[in-house]
Each structure stands twice: as C-alpha cells, then as structure tokens.
Image (tube, rainbow, N blue to C red; front, side):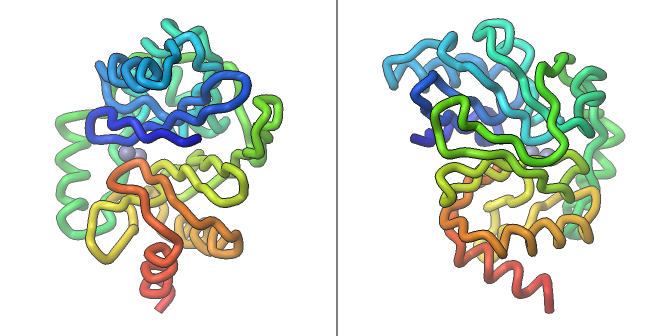
Length: 222
Ligand SMILES: [Zn+2]
Ligand SMILES: [Zn+2]
C-alpha cells in the first residue's frame, strides 16, 4: 500500500487508496519522471495522484512539486505555517544538530539558499486531518521540530510517514541531521512514543522499526 520512491537525496512515498494515489513529498527538482515510473510500474498514470502532501517546505521535498501538481492536477496540502514558504519558493537551510551538519548548514545558507518553483497550496491544516475521504484509515498530525510546520502521515495506525522528523542515515540513530528547534522536536518524539507505530518511513535513509526509534529517544532523554 505504501511505495517508496527515491527522488534525488530524498524519499517520496506513494500511498495507494481506493480513490487513486496520495503522494507524500516530491524530492528535489527534476524528479517527476521517477514518480511517473513508479506509478507506471503499478499500472497507473500520474493523473491518478489525487493529493500531494508536503511534510514540510524544504527544497529537497518540494523541488518537483510545481511540475507534479501541474501534470497530475492533484490538490496540494501543507501545514499553514509552511504555506507562505511554498508561495515564496524559498526556505532557509535548517540548523545542524551535529558538529558536521552545523558546518554544512552554515555553508548551505550561504550557497544554496533552498530555492524551488513556488506553489499555491489548495488545502492548509493546523493539526489533525483525516484521510477517510480517500477510503483509507489515515490521518495527518502536526510534528513540529525539524520545521515549525512539519507534518506526518499515519496509515492504519501502524505506519508513520514522517518526513524529516527522523533521518535513518546513521547506524545507531534516527535523529535528524538538521532541525530548527530541537526542544520542540523532542516533544514531538515523546508524543510519537505514546502512539503505537511499528514502521517509520523517513524523508532520508531506509525504512526502520519502532525499536530503533525508542533506542535513539532513550539516549536523547538521558
Ligand atoms: Zn527538511
Ligand atoms: Zn529533507
């Protein structure tokens, strides 16, 4: 039901519903063909995407958003705190959380400036949003920390498509390499701990299980 699509350095996810597809994130620029190929492999076309969920407005998640929106005709959903960034087509590089990524973040802000083609969102949310109109047991929750308007997608009470609230690129940690507000992020992690999600689908790195999340959280609390 959930298909991972590698879109540049980022993971996008296609969620199959009785009413077409939901696409979560779109990767960096020029990734539209990869999304189309994944749909074609499932016997579908790009016009079967009905909704595009933006977990947050970083250039590596919304780089192909404008093109996919135009080609598919899908509605775009974003948290209200990121709507203006989508319209502006630019977001600052977030703060690093490790020594090396702090250096990278300051370099990123000087050189890359996180530009992308601007998009007007069709749906903005503040907290919970149900996906039952698509015929699935799914809902969106606000998971701030990496950015203020970061959101995650819960599917069937077991699967969490979490954007950059987690990175799974290190052997013993799923802590994001970048976050604007680490205290807020820890609160979000504690909220997720209360829920019984088994499988996590991060914006970067491979899909991982609850055990790896709990191990990283324990170290962060100590
Ligand atoms: Zn990000
Ligand atoms: Zn990212």
